[in-house]
Image 1 (cartoon, one colour):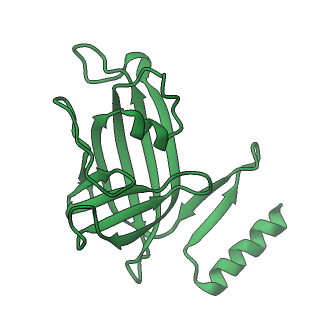
Image 2: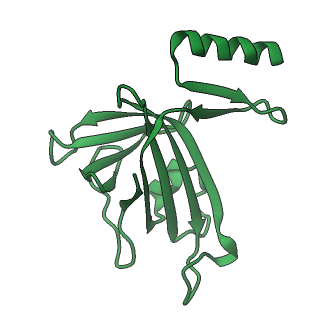
Length: 175
């Protein structure tokens, strides 16, 4: 295992790659690591409807009325092209008269690569961030409203509409 990791590190160094896949000893799973710079960290709360549940493989009958999003987008430090993302969410039922979740909620995570595309259902010139969490998982689309605001889109690239408590808008909390 050490020899494979060493060879991978040398290959990444020689090719100038800034991304590494590191194997976890316990599960044999891979975690995407990046040496790129952070483009931005976006956060927000949204309703936890059936479409959002399907993005995270949450059973449709699970109690969930809210999701707290935290997305970090990375870019290549030289070319400024998109590289990887890390998405961390807490899902569950809102705590009555409090800011949290009943029982702390459940954590859902995804990571992968992201790209910039064009076009929403309403605006073919809109800038869209497409997050690709990997095999067997659906892409997640956000329209870039401006440098500080992203809005979640359905898979047909139409805007998701929130409710009286939450929208599907995420705000940049850190550059």
